[in-house]
Each structure stands twice: as structure tokens, then as C-alpha cells.
Length: 328
Image (cartoon, rainbow, N blue to C red):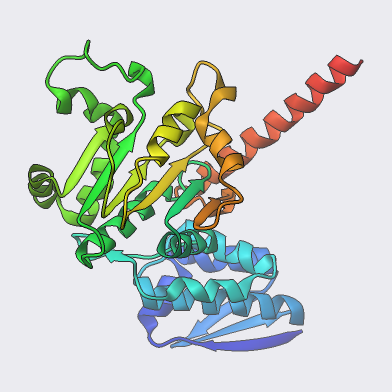
């Protein structure tokens, strides 16, 4: 048996790391088979040497996150425990760097996983980034945060957000209302992210001035988009022709981020997803990064991660059974 002492800056940090009714620290105790107690601003960890060392790294990472964010949630604790268990504790230090942006409520927007951190680095470095991954990984939200950051820094003149209106087959004429009324249901997640970053009044003002544009993908045809930050969301629902059309809209001084989840394709023929083709076609081109998130990058409720994993396992089993039956 051995013990390790970890020191916090304040009792408030201790309370944040321990969590309500000690839920966070209980998770660490169960995972690493250690006993954790605190006295004032000192945390004592007792157990087998190897386990104590891992628990210490997890607690230090959580204290660092508490200093940066002021709060911790169950998903963050689970992620930290998972990374430490996998021997990747050093990577966690990257998550406490400067915020990408700040929401209207004053909350800093930071990457919450290493995968998110690498995604943001790719957006900052490259002209075109494809962010591929399951729901809840922050693909769209972080892209919008980077777009707002670039706009405030005067690196671009406008933000253009688009997504394919698959349910309406890109033909919106039969829906009631004007163009905005017709496309709003399909573009609502993009509005939500912008409202969080800029506030509803500022978004409406910038929409009227043309500083922000939100439109279905069909309305990008025939345009050249200069000095803009352009985000194509739900790109798994584009055809090969549509995504090629979109990519060739890129003008001087612009950036593009294309996001999608290839496990949620709504096209009549999923095999014709333009995003899947683009991942193959664009891979060798310099200045383009294809960043793939994993279920570990899911930052919603931990059950979302479990659901994604369960479905992936089910689909793999089903595929093996189909192959077995076919060969049999």
C-alpha cells in the first residue's frame, strides 16, 4: 500500500472535483480501486502504487479543469478517467489552454476532449476541414465558435452556414411562408449555436446586414464565396454532385468546415453519400484535413456514448452474421 497527496487551491475546487454527494470521486475510487479522502485543500489517495499513481493523475487533471471552467460534469470525469486508464493522461493538459470563444452568458468555449482539440487545431491551420463523427461530439458547435472567433478578429467578412434539406429533397416550394420560413426547420441547429455565441439580437442584426448567411445547400450553386467562413453541416446527406458543387464555391481568403456523421445517412441510397466519397477523394490533398471523432469525444450525456457503442457493436454483429449466412 502507498499514498499520494494532491493539493488544491481552495476548498471550492475540492468540492467541484468531489462532486455532488461525492459522485465524481466515487467514480475514481471504483475505477482505480483506491481510497480518496480530503483534509482542507489536500487530497490523500491510498491504494496499490500503480493505482494510486493513476488516480493522482486523474485528480490533477480534474483540478486543472476546475480551475479553467469552474465546474465539472459527469461526462468530463468519465472522459478523464478513460484517458488516464488508457495511458494518455499527458494529452489532457492540452484541454486547459485559452478558450476559443465566449458565449453571451460568459461561459468559455474550450475543447472538452483531445479529439476536439485536434479538430480545432486543424481548423486553425488548414483551409478545408472535414469533421466526421457521431452525434454529440461538438462538430458543428465548435466550427461555429471558430467562425465567430475569425469574424471578431476580422480574419473574414462573413459567416455562411448551410446544410442539405434532405427531407424536402432540396425543393422547398411546397412549404408555407417565405424562404426563411421554409428552411428554418432544417437550419435550426445552426441558429442555436450562433445564438449561444452572439445572442439572438446580434444574430438577427448580422443576418439583416448579410454578415451572417444561413441557407440550404441548393442556394450555394453558382456562387464564389470570398473572405468567408463557410460551414456545411449534415454533409452525410449530400450527393456526390452536391458536395463537389459546394467545395468548388471556395473563394480567396475563405475557410470551409464540412461536418457529418456517416452512420446517419438519410439519402434513399446511403451508398451515394457525397461525404463518404469526399473522404476518399480529398485525403491526399495538402491544406485539407479529414478529422474523425470517436465515441470518446461525445460530450453529451454518457448514455449517448453508450448508445453509439451499442449500435456499432450491433451493426458489426449483424454484418458478420450476414456474411456467414451468405458464405454458408
